[in-house]
Image (cartoon, rainbow, N blue to C red; front, side, top):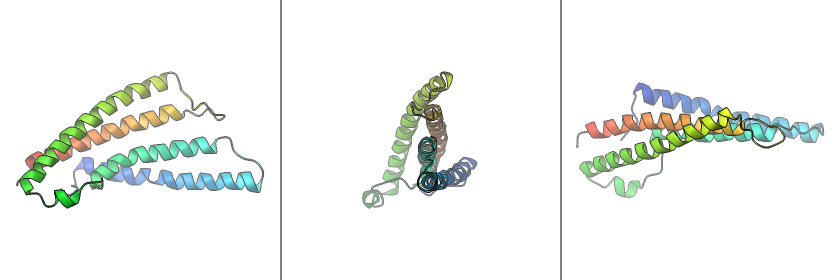
Length: 162
C-alpha cells in the first residue's frame, strides 16, 4: 500500500520533516561544544544534555514519519508475492497490532510523562535540565500521532479492493 494524502498523513509527513532539523541542531551544538572546550578551554555544562534531548525527541518523532512513508522494515520478498487478498489480510492484522501496541504504549507513556511533569523531574546531571519530562512527553505525543495514522492506514486496508 502506498502512502496517501489525507490531512493526517500530510501533517505527519510535515512534522517529521520539521523534527528532522533537530539532528542538525545537534551537530551545531556539538560544534559549539568542541570550539568552547578545545578552542577556549571552557567546556559547557549543558551541551551533552541538550544534545541528548534533541536526539531523543528527533528519534521518537521519526516513528510517525517512517510510518507515514511506509518505510518501516518489511519482508517484501514474501509479501510482494502473496495474492492481494492475503496482503490485505496481513495489512489489516498489522493495523490491529499497531493500534493495540501504540495505544497501550501511548497510554502508559502519557501517565509517565504527566508524573514526570508534576515533579519536574530532571536528568540528574550537572545541568539539571528537565530531560525526562521532555522525552516522555514526546514519546506520548508520537504514540498519539502513530495511533491516529495507524487508524487511517487500517481504515484504508479495510476499504481496499482485492
